[in-house]
Amino acid sequence: MNKNVLFSYIQFLRLLPADLLYVSSPERKTIDSDLSRVLEEIPCSHTGVGALNYSLLYVKPFRNVFYYRTERSTVLRHISRWFVRPLDTIEIHGRIGGGFRIYHNYAVIHPYTAGERFTVHQGATIGLGHAMPGHPEIQDPVFGDDVQIHTNAIVFGGIRVGSRVEIGAGAVVNKDVPDDCLVVGNPMRIIDRSGSARKAAAAEK
Image (cartoon, rainbow, N blue to C red; front, side, top):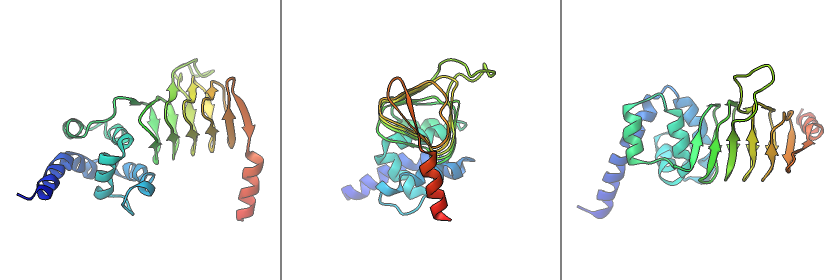
């Protein structure tokens, strides 16, 4: 048998459990939203089985996102994880909206909730701290939409981080952050971007 044919056959068998998991998942639409975030760096123009397979093989952090989305499945998920292993250096918990993207291979991501298009870079740590005032059950951060957390940033405790917020590399964030802000430094410093955001919105009208 031709080596290329044999290799293709092995890859097909290796990815088949993930493909079946994908097409049968009630979270397929959300997985497609996650996949759309990696299309710019893979040779696929649209979401689907082809983009899924390429991403699972060559965009390793996506494996963890995929298995996070399919955690309610049992048999197929366990079989797929055996053939295409997730990274042990990425942890994901909490409720995260579609368009979730992780860059690089190390992160601890434990929000209480996070909105759409949540982006996390290398070495970021998100997790447990003081409880949110009036909500003792919330001890992890709550994020809005379009939040980006850069390299080695730390965000912890029951705090609210608004939408369209960027948390700079190495920042330590343990207090509420309003919408349209950049957060830098330790101790944290909030740079309000709402004025420029309003100008941009007005220019689009």
